[in-house]
Length: 261
Length: 266
Image 1 (cartoon, each protein chain N blue to C red):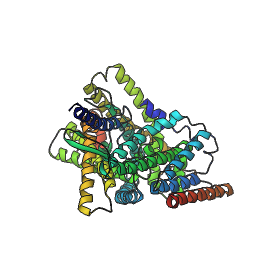
Image 2 (image 1 turned 135 degrees about the vertical axis):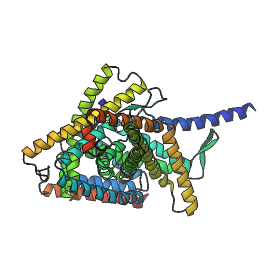
Image 3 (image 1 turned 30 degrees about the vertical axis):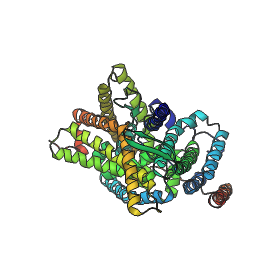
Image 4 (image 1 turned 60 degrees about the horizontal axis):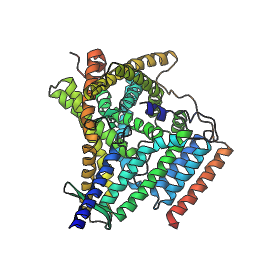
């Protein structure tokens, strides 16, 4: 849970730097198109270019390798997993084989190469996502979502979930340490029972808090309408320049990715 | 003969190595999150396919939310907070039995949300939770959001909800109803993930029956790998946790379950 709190916090996005100051719609445009190019790529160059450029850009705002590494571990493990799946199921040329409990396992070259491409796509795609999450707050994403005409109800639920998430994580940690001090995690069964009670208590508290939040919101004039009141400012000349330059960069990368290799 | 023996040993080592790699991937301590398909895995055609598949559920879920928002005062804060609570619940590091505390796994939580808020609203909550996880935890992704919502949101929520209702109809105790919802929703979630990954093996160049056979074989293998490592015991553990959680709420605040129409007023 401590790791989760450390990882999930969006305090990097609240910093003031050149990346956080870029208009959210420009960032979403770049990330969106880049993600599409990343998954459409036929070779490993384009995903690796996305990985390298995103990494360099993130290093300019002093994001440490530890922070990036913490978020990359699981996707990279998944990438290796999928590489093995492809190696086992695709291709003809066997590079590694063996049996396990009577079950034939053979890794094939062609499959591994497909898997390697997928692995690089994971690396590139995840780094692009990190570029967005390290530089954009959820409230800005909500504003952009409203601009994109995403239903208000979904934005409202997203805002609520995000608003109370950290609060509930902190409460859970407090309750967990109390349970731990009373040997609630001494055995496997005790651990499971403690988690069950913790889950139940968490839900009870969240429902009571929801009632209080609603009462407070009504007293402040909430009548079931939108809860996000801030609007995005119209795009200015600098934003259009940024949009154009990222568009040209992506078009160039797509040209490289689709026709050169 | 000696060389042959060595060769056999080497082969054995290689196969063991492959298996060890599999196990280590699935059971990395504290990071064995709910196996969402990560960003970059799906090619565009499959990404679009899964988005199309989930769209009706998201639309119906959103319409239900809108309707309830008008009719029930305070419904939106309730959904938001229960969503946040389920998100936190899905981050509980449950130790995998049999691995002596070496690995922890994380429950899906959709069985719980489907039980409390209904399957369609649960799909929306799962979608939002997956969106936040993709952005801020790098678990899952934006182009893979469709397949992840399908496996965790659609399959997990509906299977969990129906398992709970079926268990209730059979007159089981509340703990066992919660247990059924937890276990079944988890099983279906991993089945969905296995289907999503197994379909990647499907190739246009092969004859259709062969392609289907290969794909089905891959799905089965992935599902077996999930189930025989951390995720199989996790299904049972999540069932017990959900069972205890729902029993705890009933014991402490039964009115909450009655208001949410999870249990009937006696």
